[in-house]
Image 1 (cartoon, rainbow, N blue to C red):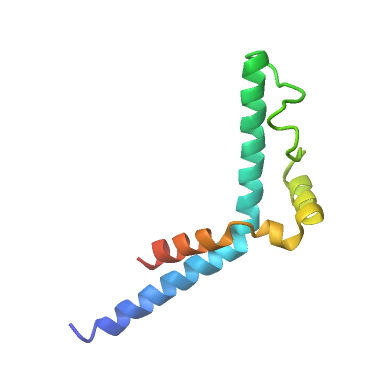
Image 2: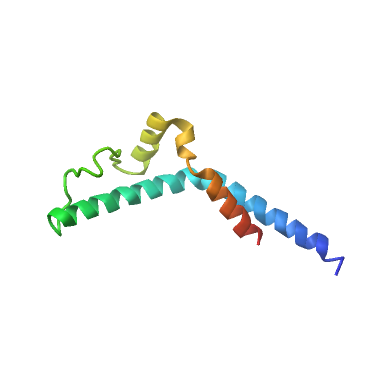
Length: 104
């Protein structure tokens, strides 16, 4: 019906806006989380290649990647090496996906 149509558009716009805002605010934390997980996966794959129960001290595939000691160290390192833009790497696809998902 035509009376419910404006309400649907308001919900669509509100959902898209909420998804975009949430993604922009939380993206740096998600980026740090993903980098820490990738680092952990890199160590795990290197350690299973050398010994199934020990972390490898270095591997040729991950030697060029930064080594983070935790969340705050990763934040500081990214800011120092890549600047504020580094914290928002990959933001456009994330905003697009969240805006659409939250809007529907």
